[in-house]
Every structure is written in structure tokens, then in C-alpha cells.
Image (cartoon, rainbow, N blue to C red; front, side, top):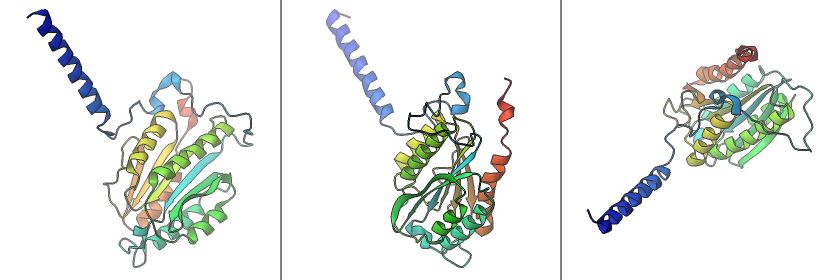
Length: 254
């Protein structure tokens, strides 16, 4: 092979490699985080980062934190799985019953999307269970399912609270939804980010959608399928059960 042909062959090989790299990067998420889960990363665990000068430390550094995402989208008007009433009424009743079992000493927050749009209703704070129940009771179905936006805000809130607690305590992001995300790409990116960068426990109760939801990711999201009111409240209660079974001492002394 002469020098000219050798040069052409090398150039073609480099071009093919470049195309392959672009194809891999444009192919979207495979459903797996690009870095190992936070709990398996060892010495580089740095979450939640140093608090800013304007952040006041929490009085209870060991507090449990639950940030809830409640789906009040248009599909919640349907009566399937609603035990004879609109799906949202069944979901609201189950959620309100569940909140009565959450300790008022725990910090709770709420992101709601319904016919009024998507917004944070409550920032993380203790002793606001009654407010949670009142807001949920008035949710009215409508609009899309921006789970990605909701998870983004939830992560930001939990990270901020973790800075106030110097990383101590528990952090749970709890999603109750009956549909696929209208911003799925953002949702997947945020779930990957949470799994890779933080110890936040992700919980999803998929109401009347079976096991096929994008958030059903074993090892990353604690996913529960609920097809009726009984299974819905059971899925919510499991969040508390998993929290109670968590023992920080089991990670010490290694």
C-alpha cells in the first residue's frame, strides 16, 4: 500500500469512529444512569455540597424528609380503577389517609399539577400535614403530566434541606401518578442524576397503569403498581415502612 492510500485509509477510519461516537451520544438514555448509583461510589460521595452563607442549619439534623409529587392531570378524570368514582377522588382519599400516618415532626413538601398548572404548593417544612390535606382535597384534574419538572423541583428542595441538615437524616421523593410523563426526556435525566449524585430514595406509585411505566426501574426507583384504592394506600404506606426499616448504623464501622 502506498503512502497516499495509507493516508486515505487512516482518514476514513477516523471519520467512522467519529460517526460512531456521535451515534452513541445521540441515541438517548438506555434506562441506566451513566455513572454508578450514589451508594456504590465510595469515597467520592460529596452530596449535598457545602451550604451557602445564607443557609441556616436545621434544628433537627436527623429529620426525615418527604417531598410529594401528586398527579392531578386530565387523565385523573377517568373512572377506571376508581372504585366507581373519578380516579382523582380515589387518589385524594388515599393520600389524605396516608398523610395522617406521617409524623408531624417530619418535613413534608408538595408539588402538584392539575387544571391550574404545575407548581410547588409547599416547601419542605415540619408540622404542615393539615395544609397538605387541604391542598390535595381541592385538586381538580386537568392539563398534562410534567413529571420531569416536578422531579427537578423535588430534587432541588431535598438537596437544599440536606444542606441545612449537613447531609444527615432521610430523603424521600414520592410520586403518585396515573400516566406517562409529558416531559419524559427531562424525567429520565433527572432520575439518572438523583441516582448517581444523591442518597435520595425515589418512590413511585403507578395508579392504574400497571408495571409498564418509565419510572419502573429496578434498583433505582421503588415502584409500586396500584389498581384500586386498597393497593394505592398500601403502596403509599410502604414508603413509611421502607423508611422505618432504614438503619444508618448498618453502614457504620466498615
